[in-house]
Image 1 (cartoon, rainbow, N blue to C red):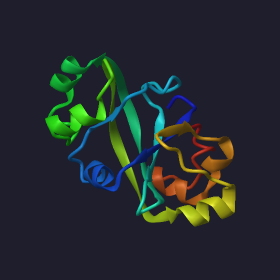
Image 2 (image 1 turned 120 degrees about the vertical axis):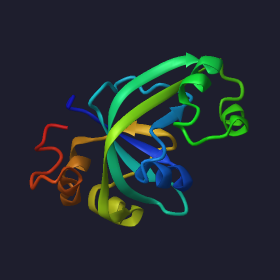
Image 3 (image 1 turned 180 degrees about the vertical axis):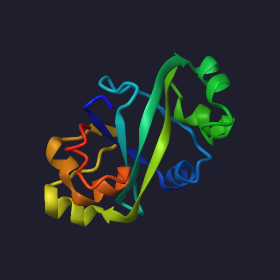
Image 4 (image 1 turned 60 degrees about the vertical axis):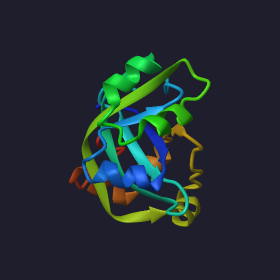
Length: 154
């Protein structure tokens, strides 16, 4: 792993497809600057769920013109051509974040608990995780290790 982590805010219907193993690439309009192969992505599911539900390991990040990106991600991003066009309206290129090694928390950590315990604020799209956010005990279960995610070197 690379020693950093990112929190991605993902809509419930897409998060469900990620953890069912159907969706293997996340699309973004803006490339997060500090993510590379091996970065841990914490998955925060947006409203109405509003909870941290799991994580995945980033395998590859690509930035391509929209036509090329669609050819690369169709069938992997679980999005229709119309949804793709609406999401990327006005953009000339897009980002594909490919991932593997999914970890689902046994019990989602609700936003209220995240706020109370560590002052967590959910991102609109993404943000980099702070070290204090990675010591939440439930994160140890993401990797099957008894150490916290911070101790694992993420």
